[in-house]
Amino acid sequence: MDTRFSVAIHSLILIANTERAVTSEQIAVSVGANASYIRKITSLLKKGGIIDSHQGVVGFRLLISPEELTLYTIYRAIFEADEVHVFDLHQNPNDGCAVGRHIQPILTEEFHDIEKKAEQELRDKTLAECIRKVKDAIVREK
Image (tube, rainbow, N blue to C red; front, side, top):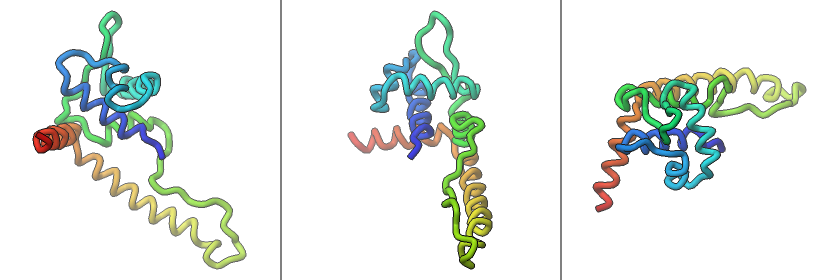
């Protein structure tokens, strides 16, 4: 299972809610990951135009407001040119079997439709919504 997307959202929530610039080491502590892994994620976010860091200044800052930053934008930045599929097809079905001969084109179409719906859901959700939900959970915890 690939966790890059959830780690990216976690990191961005920290960056958005901290007055000072947040370092990869600080993010790593919260995420429970190695700082080098966080640097890979933040590198993708920076390349995607979502965050920035400056030489001589330690840490990251958001370039897009949480209200305007969709989860789809984050998703695309993290997976760049990777062709990510929520569902993948098994290889080498038996062409001698009626089901095996037809399963791949049928599931390819079905899975494509599901993925398009998931992409639309990601376009409809923002980082600001995730931030609000985290803050709500913190308040309920008290």
